[in-house]
Image (cartoon, rainbow, N blue to C red; front, side, top):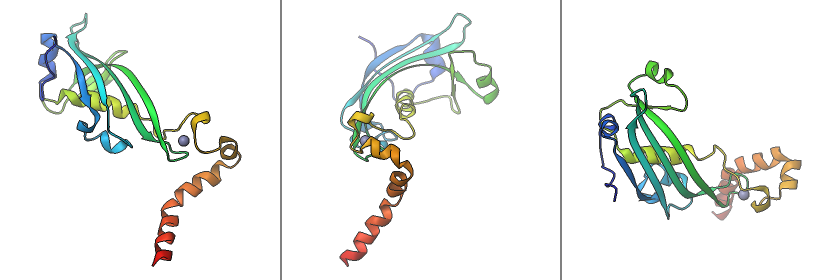
Length: 173
Ligand SMILES: [Zn+2]
């Protein structure tokens, strides 16, 4: 059995030690991700492998799998986003070092010596969320034909929603 992911760790040291972790985390424990979801029930499964590549470069390979519940920006109903992401990071201490990283590395900018390894999992889930998540056309509550015909109208209607609610409030008084 693999060891439990530590609360805090020095990622450089984990790489030198060749540590590997895998486990599951409740989505409601991920406090930056949870507010972006319509429901934070469920879990994410993760694997993190810290080591060094052939050039001796520090390497963190990760894999995250989860089902996220998001708000569809077309019909405003809940939608499921299956996430299955693999990533490769290398710890760097500045932008210059970050720019020198070859493919397929993404920089992990370290401002402090220690980090919360679970942040790597949470960051990846947050990155997986598109800027305007939408149902597939056939699953969306908004009639796409109508939407295509008048995208401006639908979008402006959504923008006006807060004001519509305000009007409703005023009427109630
Ligand atoms: Zn929708």
